[in-house]
Length: 378
Image (tube, one colour):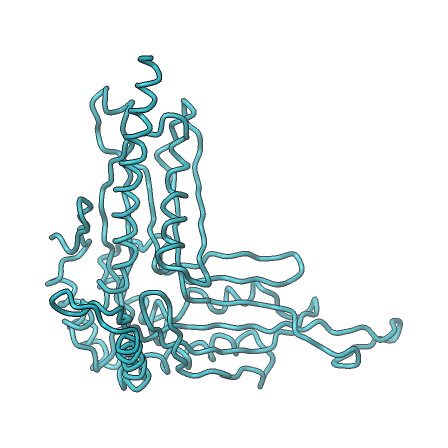
């Protein structure tokens, strides 16, 4: 079933619209039975892309061109790129296990940063040592639940709309999201889940919510974001960043709540199909005890396709499989049609960017090959 296409790139859903809506009905049944109160149901949109090979660049360099375009089309604070490959044979070839993550995530999963302390705060002593500062870290999570497309002034009948009108309509969309009973319920449930997760590793009484259901606006969407923080004591005998990841992974915004039982149900609903890097996390862990991790959403996962080519095509073409994970939280108030449209909305900018990347890359490489041939002929 073709779910969406831009120009020549056609995406197919892992589960059809009808199946996805049946999955939402199953989620409602589990909620009525008391097994869960929010389930993050996801799907995979996939496309196969064939491009002319670049005459001088290695194949593994292609995904970075997509990532640069994605950063331009959908700038986000937790964007990331990871390219895993192993050279196999000629320089232009890579092994079939190659994997590239082109991520434009607006969501922070978890961060750990050094707390700002005065010299006399929280000092520790021992019988044989002088006063030493007690290291403390601030742990922060910023789950997103609630998404609405921004208004860009599409207008009707080709009539251009004034910037004032566009701004007013866009502001109203953000206000409607802020007041949405359904989205606020989704957000609050995940805030409660993350307060519990952080409470397992943070100092007792330190977990708090400085921002609840705050609207953040990005290039293409408005998002409802909450901020949960806690204090982590950094002594050797207490907790560190690995303990934080262990307590909080996977991110509650990508599972639902309660986490463990909901994940068991989702394994059945999603037919045991792995989400891959999607809904995981990507970031860094530092030797100084800090870390910052995103949630892998609004992302394209590229792998080398095993599509068969003729001998001539094998030397001139390269084929990639692109996968986009997308989904949404299902609660008792969810409507199956609305949820399906939200799933497509969250993938729209990545699908469009992939299409632009394919068109631009094909045009540039074809022109480059023509220029090369011209030089050879001369």
